[in-house]
Amino acid sequence: MKYSLEMLATKEMAVSNTEVPYLFFRRLAEHPGVKHGCSTRVGGVSKGIFSSMNLGFGRGDSEEEVLENYDRICSAIGITKEQVVLPDQVHEVVVRKAGKADCGKGIVRPREYSCVDAQITNETGVALAVFGADCVPLFFYDPVARAIGTAHAGWRGTIGRIAEKTVQTMEKEFGSLPQNIEAYVGVSICGDCYTVGGEVAQQFMTEYPEAAKQTREQRAEGACQLDLWKVNRIILEETGVRPENIVIGGVCTRCHSDVLFSHRVTGNDRGSLAGFLMLSD
Image (tube, rainbow, N blue to C red):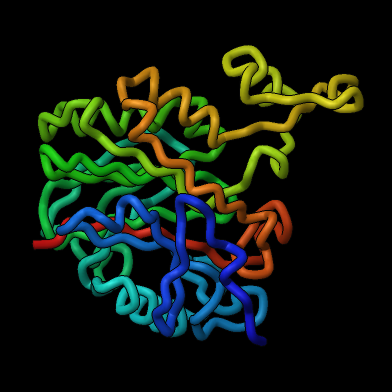
């Protein structure tokens, strides 16, 4: 099947012209010494519900095919799978410092850590990965301290303010100042496509009413449309990141579920998208 990926391009994100396509932030790509990219469903070898660029191990896909997918997407971005450090995402707010000794963990080497949804580093050649299939992947770059971070912000991570914790950990570990950090909100579900109910809706409507919209029917049901992009922007601004340094990619996984994995569309019968961020020499 031939896909048209041009539809994914936005003001802030573009699609690569490589054989294996990936999305990238236009602004972040202008920085020398930084490599990054976000996968699509296209360009891999996985089959069936994982078709075709599945980057999630443990979902029932062939490990050999997932490894081949990593080779393909990493080569397109200009990194190797041996440089990548995988998180262990469980919707917590744990931030872990990674270094060269961690390269390849989760892919070609075992991980000795668990329950890690955010990673930071200031070492070159260490490619931080973050997974998603509707949840918000966050990317952080400090051009002054030369440090980076990635974080996985579903509704649990967002309400737990993992964006704030990542910035604060970069400040503690690397001397990063929030006003110097650029934050990028990656490929994920948009506010028009994301409905939540019950206690989750109530909590967000109470704490972030500007990001929670309700129709008359939703009001009666105690549900709302939740804009996680906006909530994370609010949290980042409250943490001290300058508004002009917060970039919302604007690419929705559910709107484009033919070329992006979306949990809201297919549930667990799917693969995983991944984003990568690395400091290079």
